[in-house]
Length: 257
Image (cartoon, rainbow, N blue to C red):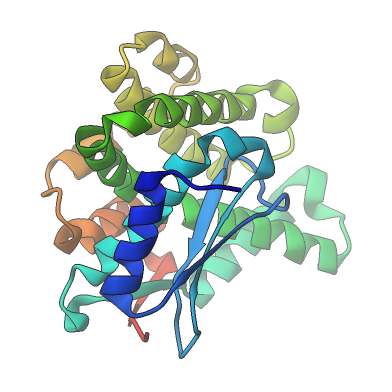
């Protein structure tokens, strides 16, 4: 696939900032709501990897630019201030308790319970890590690169639709209450934030009906209390985790290139 000028520039900027190239490829294994992801090179890896879902090919330039922006935010910090996020044993223990106490999964074999717990854990950690920082990345792209706005809005609207699927009775019957409410709170914050930016106030109405708009507002207040620069990203992520009751899940370790 031929890349646009902006995404090519971002790829060059990442290579300049980190000394490593970026490999880009489609990946149909990405699960909703993920349209793209970045794996930042660590422990001597020879490159960074950006993947995007083939169904989002029309938005690829925006998706590549936004994923590269996460790498550039990390490397804009002094080396001593760069941290990676992992989870703690508390995360594994708590997510497994959810699964074992949830009637639809309480009688599953242990390996399937463990897989379900891992899905819940990794999904929530991914959202806590990416959504609040993503607001800052996307606002910056929106300001500096109006050429990407159409693709950006397509991606946001697709995510709004995917998030709304969690509100359906079939999905809600199959997710334990605690992680379900956390997921909905993050989705409510996403809907409120982008509803304001794109003049779509109706996006929050399903979350109002679900009773989670206040929690979404509290997450946004945590974000708005901090600066927009990368030096605030760790505090931002930790603040969202604390607000959701997941603070003990996070373990910060120095970034190793």
